[in-house]
Length: 337
Image (tube, rainbow, N blue to C red; front, side):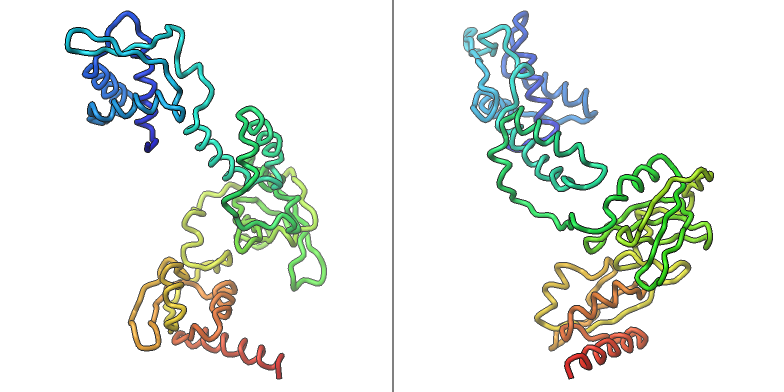
């Protein structure tokens, strides 16, 4: 049986009707009560039918439901419904199988955060839920796997960064990029954490450059809160900030470029099912596959992604990207010559 908000409203409304020994509820009354309850809670008219109520009653009486002790009393040619036990209510019962399944699904998603800083409480909470609802055996075998690297350097700073964003605190970060010979201290105002390719990145206003900096957590050496006034983010919507890029490198005041790629016949189905970028569209289908068109910034992540497809993708335009990929291919070939 499908479960949704309306179904939950119907079950609890029927429970109230069956518990009311001061009135006789016939099937028409149950339909009316459920429709009234749905309208009261949602403002919409569900238009519940008798068949739905009969199905609901069947479910509530089943082991998957609450095994309700429902009696059917004849009144001439009609039947009214009432609990055999005046003290019974589904509100007093433990969770049923349907709810247990929903809880298991929720826990399997939440368990993704196990081991992540800021979510240490998850370990204890999951154990308590497992024990309380006897779900342990069924949770031991995972059925969903998420991409996550618990051994990534810098995760120990996640809590401090998370809290600094949440409570609007400026930070001083000792940072050493891959190309820097010495670490440097940066005064920043943190705004946003983003994961890409199993790595975490912090986006923050950099006081020295007066721009948004993209800092990898695995290149951070030390994170300290400072007393300088926090500069709030009033200009950037991070839901849209990455619209013109692949990955996390955004070039300020840079317009997206048109990119044309020749995609091989073998790779095309994969590229169609998992687009390289949201702007992707088929420009032309041909004997070798298809030409696809993109509109985005040319950044390190995009170049790396195109190069990773090897001979299955050929850059048609722009020439700048074509030259970059050609140079990388030549350097790769030198390693094997």
